[in-house]
Length: 275
Image 1 (cartoon, rainbow, N blue to C red):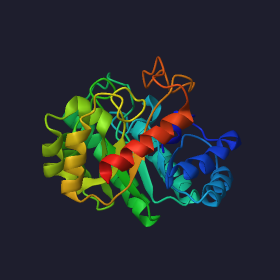
Image 2 (image 1 turned 90 degrees about the horizontal axis):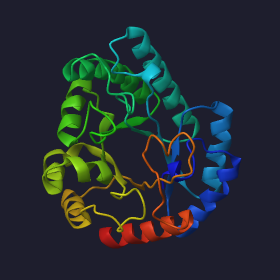
Image 3 (image 1 turned 180 degrees about the vertical axis):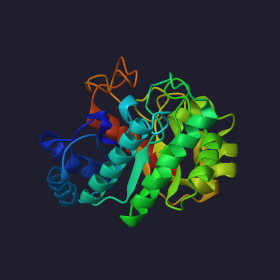
Image 4 (image 1 turned 90 degrees about the vertical axis):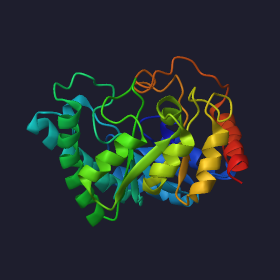
């Protein structure tokens, strides 16, 4: 379960959620990383392990740390920040860092062409990927829909971008919410690019309880089973009360009454369709 349902920065008040999620049947949590220090994440790692869970990490980029920027100073800041996130991922005992690592979220004013911006970004991510590999961490690049980012909007975009990076520890994060908007055919996306998937987000069209939106789950699960995918699947849902995140995720109202209930219904749905 992605912890962004509750917060962009997991603190002690959220630690009891680990046990609750384990009891619901979750085996892992996805932890957002934006600030903190090594000791902070070591303490969290212990709590995650005590609950019987593993974890992955997720982060997003800001305009002042944009890998796609034409400004080399900004790109250098992005590289430094992503390497720090890799370090904190290691402190958590995780081996996978995911998210739209390639460009600033919600920023559409990059003066470069898309091709130039992708090239700038790939040069940064290649160095980050090499550093991550030295620390036993893989990267999963999440394409976002056209309303959230400009650079990578679908599996085809991501596959071309991975060719620019050309590192074995980098793959595609397939997110059902974004794919529901951008892909012409879910099954074709899996057929052509599924071999590059190293993480998957199950996320509903309305960002709420799985199965209560418009995502084509029939095609998704058929394609998933056809691929024989063995990697991790994180359930991702968002709420309107997460300060600093709800606004950028455009979550203005909740379509559920209780977060834990959402988690329970969503994992039961996910287990049913993937059985």
